[in-house]
Image 1: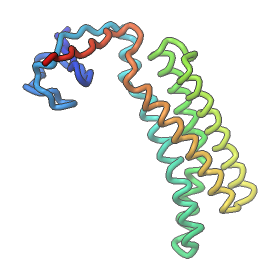
Image 2 (image 1 turned 30 degrees about the vertical axis):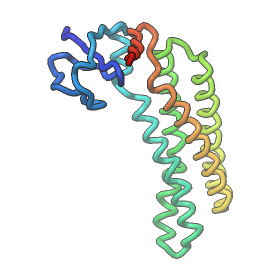
Image 3 (image 1 turned 180 degrees about the vertical axis):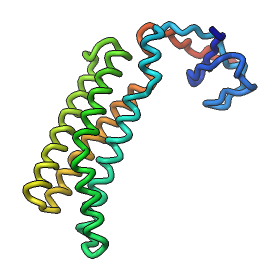
Image 4 (image 1 turned 45 degrees about the horizontal axis):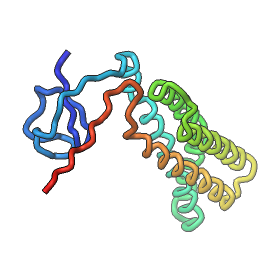
Length: 193
């Protein structure tokens, strides 16, 4: 196994022999690096390094962002290729629940792998918002199939977008959390003048 080093200011971990004078993540000189020993089990690292949840999240976020945009275009510009835009919007609405289920399942796997529990408050909040977003996608699908009311579809899709934004903000706050079993980061030494 190759020797690992970690940038103290930004936390970037890399192989020591690939260090080329500066941190590739933050650009600070290599003197800020320290030895690092990975304490997360290889099985957990393998699962996390597959990045299944981030990939699934990007798919569903793309869908949930495009749906209100397309519906708004249909509403504001009714003469601008309405049949093409409606087909694309309906496709996204139809497959949004599947994309969200994939994101939900991979999120559960990621949460258990990363934190060994789904009980931390931020993870519970993510689960709640995920369920709300999934329910919203079902309402959107039901509305599309039974009503075709453009403004109602737009309103429901904007509510879903709000839940997706909340999920993204919670997820963003979890990005830099030190995993259980990982080597803790040292605090920077204060320089006295």
